[in-house]
Length: 445
Image (tube, rainbow, N blue to C red; front, side):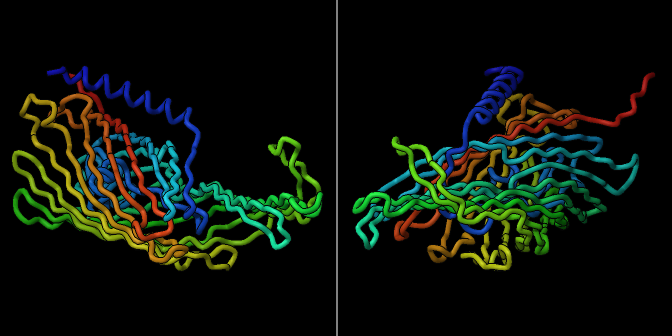
């Protein structure tokens, strides 16, 4: 069997290779649904939780930053600091009911987070803090359609969009006995840019029509607050039932919008736009975007013997029907998510010399009603598997020095075979969790 240090070195090299890949990769994503609201929702959980079906409401761990429920920060290991960064590589295939398909690939950093325990010496109250940055939604689409005008001239319409929203957060949590409560605060911000172009080809008469373009640019941002709670119910000496809840109220994002309407023609090679006239232009139009309220609840059954088994489930609801853009509704509805997952550690105390006895194995499923109503009640589902791979084998005495590579593989589908458009996706996520002891006062004999 390979040595643990050899395996660890290979894992680090693999992670750095993937990181260099994402830096060089340009986003080629194309999701027509991201045209509505603030775009497609980015999976909110860390890699650890993604591997077990995105279960997060009641989950806490000494070496994981669960930023979905800030109450979990109270469980960060004593005198411990953690740094966690993720890398997401996904591929999606769009198919319509006529058999045409389109494949796109994308890679991005899904989060960067850090946390530490600041529990006072000999205190019975645990106190943790965390901070980080993560995306919330993504806007990325490119849609084309063609046709004929009543005059007989051909036209092509192009709809393009890009942008997304992000969340920079700072959170803290306090735990006492079996109960912990936490809060995240920070700043939500982003962009939402749309371009619509109509190109008219004068088939019947020269210079009869000119092409036109509309550009709308949005920049938005505002403060936010979200709360979380967790409670542990002892069932026996080695079994617990963990309960969790989190959520946030509806918030208003201050928005600046600029608009530009212009006519143009194409160069002789049909590749370059030549501006003819500016029909209308306006900048710094102030307004608001209403970001919806949301909440999540869940449980996690935790039992320990030679190994440790977790089984949990979450229900999450987003009130996207309340979404407003400059007081206007969009094709959005309230959405819900159901997550079910499990995690298993074969050897809790690290007695075995087998490396794989210290690996955390994860699996799960999830089902979701999407917030977009453009094609009715759109559903999506996915299956996940994952693993927490320690860079080196550790014992309980060395827990505060453990480093783990977490991986999650997800395969899913949005919509079904009866829909006008359906999407199959494949997502691989890897996270690198570094941790060590800190604020330790050295003692010498």
